[in-house]
Image (cartoon, rainbow over all chains, first blue to last red):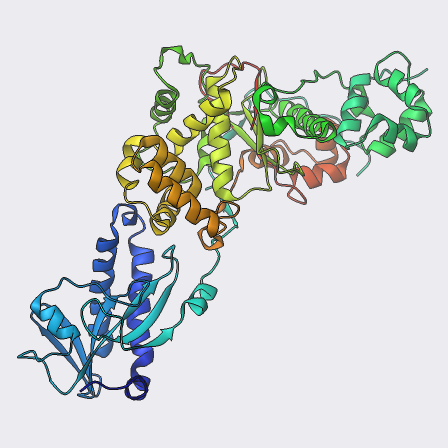
Length: 200
Length: 364
């Protein structure tokens, strides 16, 4: 059964702060913990790292939460909520689509087709982030996929890009102070001091 | 009897205050012809007029008696197109201020010493500019990868970095290596942190490469700076499959402008001309060629060596402000504003081991 945007909005309302925290924590992790190696990461590596961190934070934040069940099977990490929706954590491109290898399982998942171990009543949704052009801010969104290569049926913004960009702190223009270390010495021969001026 | 006056110091003081002969003559209520004669040493200055001059130009009387050498514009002016478009009055003011700062540093260094790693180098044995940059990095024992603080590198090597308000965006920096002094880098405070870092590396290139000026010197200094800040061996693997997002990531890591990274990728041939053009267009559309994103701003590096020299005079040599003012031939208020953090930011550089001063002068 495919639920509408309004129904999803209502069901997920109590869970939205947690979902947003999952996404933002993963994004923050990448910004702070990978600064030394991010220049050698491809877009794919970055996406994989962010996905792993979203899974980590989802495990942490949804653990034993009422109405929530975590499902890990066939390489998928899913969060089922109220037996009604299933969330999968992904990166979205500029067209609000997620990228997937077109395996049978991936296609069936996106088309809401029957999968042997998947709760059939629940609507499958995708949640995640969409980066701005510089990767300096992210939009958090929930989407209902319609099928492989297709635009989503609908999208819910948890954090829109304009708000996210506005929240980004400007890079500091503050001066970068040099660590104090003594680099100046008095010459060994004493210098002749000038006579105290009278005008202070 | 009139006091002995160095007429060149009158010119220096006038230009440092940004005044023309006509403007100063007007303020002194004398003719330009009379001032011209005084400045050229043809006519002595009367004590009464000297007193008025000290007030109008805000220098103490003994400033005008100093027997200092005045240095003219550097070789950088010869081949730098933007610099040639600077109004003469602005250029005179900048050179006057630089001369005065140089005199101050010369006097301050009589009582103190700093480490020196700069070397008078013969670069003729190197195949290319980039080789020289690599050699300097090796000689200064810099680790691979980005330079965390370019100003500190210069200061640790014995150069003195002096941020100045040039009041123009046509001049990034001026470097000077006067006889008997460490290299001095006068940087324009009106630029963002990433540009200042590149400017310092560029000026370092001038000092090391250009004993004799040549028409290619600006390009050579840019290539030196690029290799110094972004060594090809270290950065090349990261400059593939470039996007704006990747450039932003690289900017944060290498602390250089996105545009500098894009130029570097073109130089190293890691992207095609078509890819480069596409990125330049994207940069232009986003406005990044004029101003790069604020969230990616690189912190401005603050030098500290000159302040250390001042502090040492104050704390260990026990100089009072009036005594420093007397040594530097300034009024107390200007000592405070210039050297005690009340107005402009000033700092020093160290000298480098084995480098004798060569009198090199460049500007970028």
